[in-house]
Amino acid sequence: MTNLKLATLNGGERTVVPVDSLRVGEGLTMIAGPCTVESEEQTIETAIAVKKAGAQALRGGAFKPRSSPYAFQGLGLKGLQILKKAKEETGLPIVTEVIDSRDVFWVSEYADVLQIGARNMQNFSLLKEVGRSERPVLLKRGMNSTIEEWLNCAEYILSEGNPHVILCERGIRTFEKYTRNTLDLSSVPAIKELSHLPIIVDPSHASGRASLIPSLSLAALAAGADGLIVEVDINRDEALCDRDQTLTPSEFAHLMEKVRALHQFMASRQ
Ligand code: PEP
Ligand code: MN
Image (cartoon, rainbow, N blue to C red; front, side):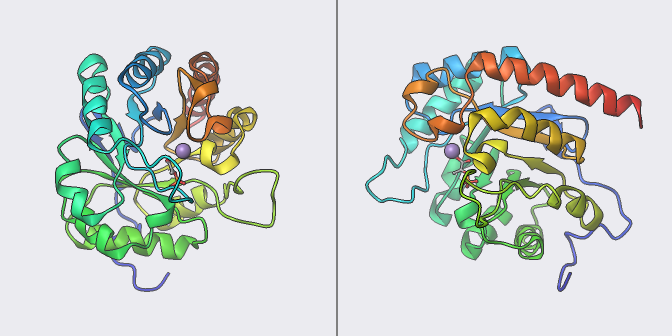
């Protein structure tokens, strides 16, 4: 790997990223919530449901990087205010995307973790800005990016002084059309070999299909992922964005049972 200094493992300690009382990279991290914040009721009810099932952080987009400029772009500030309320109600820390370097400072007032989406993985001015932030960063892998390019993007953030980077594998583009992306599971052990940073997997965006999420989740954890970020929505069937890859709260609760069982099994074998 060329030009990497701070992101490499170098025989050193693994990084644990603190997010309130959650420690990403230590044990299992489960992040869940709607693709997009649509209303207060939807977000808070989903937050309550995922917390009950065992999620430790809430995801939800207020700024959505949509392929079409005419698609719903998210509620912006109002969405962030709703996420803050959901945190007040449940105590769950908030993971939310920032898509513009000019927004990093004020979005940090609402976000416990700043998500950099796949489409912005190589937005270098955005990476530098979150690198200057106090907030941990969830850096998604670009859909057309190599592991080396991805780690170089983590390096951008680390080199600005922010040590708290969580990597997220969310699938890459291949010739396969049945799934929305192809989950590159090999990146999980590869990152563990190359870097000290924690890595989680997003089976929702990787597959585009709710039915595939349980198998991909278990496979990701078996491959050594530190956790998962999963789309869950109380109003799944009416969700404006990514409905087909979103679980209902009861499907998520069922997934959590399997995930816990696998995690316990793996811990007992270490
Ligand atoms: C998301 O998490 O809602 C999202 C847009 O993901 P990605 O950037 O991985 O496509
Ligand atoms: Mn989504």
